[in-house]
Each structure stands twice: as structure tokens, then as C-alpha cells.
Length: 79
Image 1 (spheres, one colour):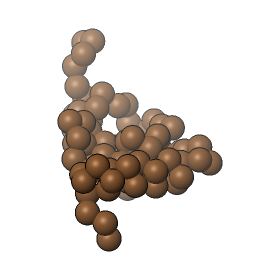
Image 2 (image 1 turned 135 degrees about the vertical axis):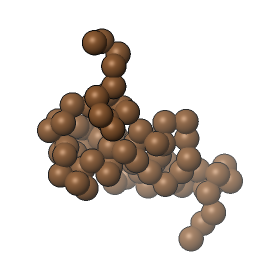
Image 3 (image 1 turned 180 degrees about the vertical axis):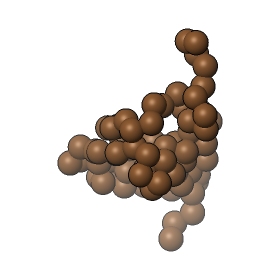
């Protein structure tokens, strides 16, 4: 049925999908946000070989920038 969730995939993913990941999703792996649990589940599914994650070349710079901004705003501690 539309809107139903399949198994443990609370982010409405189908097994065996390929996802283009962006910095905001990776950022949520380390910094709590409203959708962090969904982002973490996607990462765990990747680690378990359920999904494939790909990213653009600029991905590391975008994640680094997001972490710098979070540090400057006091959301995370340097280190």
C-alpha cells in the first residue's frame, strides 16, 4: 500500500537501491537532527551490503564545511 513502510527501512527505501548521498545526510550521522535516525539506518544498510551509496566529487568538502559551520555555531565541539 502507498505510504507503508517495508521491514526496517523506515526511510521508505527498497532493498538493493543505489543512492546518491549528500552532505546533509552524512552530517546527520554525527550531529543529531530530526531525521538522523533515517540517515543512520541508511548508513547501516550500506554497511550491511543492502544498498550502494555514491557521492559527487565535492562531497568531502561539503561535509567538512557543514562540520565547520556546526562548530562555529556551537553545535559540536572542536576536536
